[in-house]
Length: 498
Image (cartoon, rainbow, N blue to C red):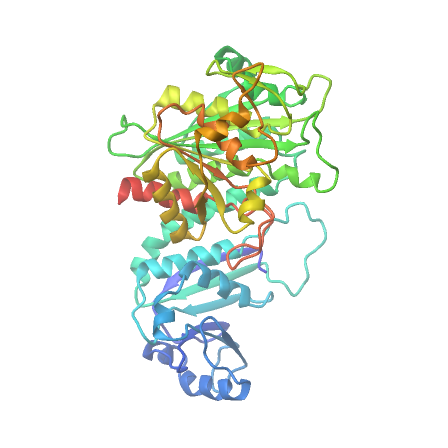
């Protein structure tokens, strides 16, 4: 895979060298524009397909090396299958798929985005570039060994189409989204000795260059506000906790109520006194995947100059088992005034979110709030790693998130909430306890959070199975997936821009 992707747009012209990527259908036909770019390619595809027993089924490929009669070094043929298959093509995935088929040594490639059965649109071309940018990502900043000499450092990728001007314009917003996803991936992939709470907060301030307003609350400020739940989690760490509030005011009415996104930012989670098993604990550097998503989202919105008023807030802590760490049996007072009995110090993310949710709904009165957290292993038992768990007190918001998930491929599945589950987190000694035990663990965690949102329309996304270590896909080969940036960007776009 390449180290850097340089992407440009052009009209469909004759391809003189490098690698060409073209599209065909079940009948192995190519468009007239593709034939013009690579004279004789139509007959060559059919000959090569016959020799390789290539049937042209949807999303299968044929690789033609040193094609006879052409100056291009290689032609990669992607079939979109039958006309009905072509109409259902996910062009984001297609972009990632093509990058995955290019050899590591490739220095230049031209993708002819012209179809035999239908006209390509600017949005489809732009979506293709989004997938290409996402698939090209890799995180190797701490590797000191030289890369294989066969691997290209830079791939110059040209997207040739009949809608090159409009596609270039649409592609700018997709580039902003891709950069937001890549930022979120970077944050999740960083080691915890580099990305501790103060360092994470500093990274967030880089968004000021894009026009995002940043406010950082330190321990003193949070104590003054009474954030005992959040501060209790981080009190065993040598790194002080932080609350970062990011604000993007892009709507026509800058004073209109914003929408808000809140992320859990536990930069490393040992479990505290209720310490986790050693096996796999290194993955707990990714327990800030929700916060990473929120930072990536704010980057994407600002970079594409979204016409929206948006608050992004992240509670950043490190959960360590120091002598000053909170204990099972402790009772803390949240900013809301509600008291919380600590049953298990490894149920810490909900404590962080409780204070941040209360602070945001109380200060900014948002139209709605969505929080994201790598909160429970229980959600992976229920949904695996294909869907994030969705909990909400508002059917309309839940429905819009579901649709946005189906559209972007970052899918969510709604889980239940109900007063019956409250009984599991009622405490004998405080207003609530921070865990209700094994059964319904992801539900009781969400039920806990619901106590800190009042009547604000709210949704909670449990992304424990999707934010890190998720299955490899056409658009991601990284341990940190950046999951949620595309989903929430779409939600904001639909809410403000229709």
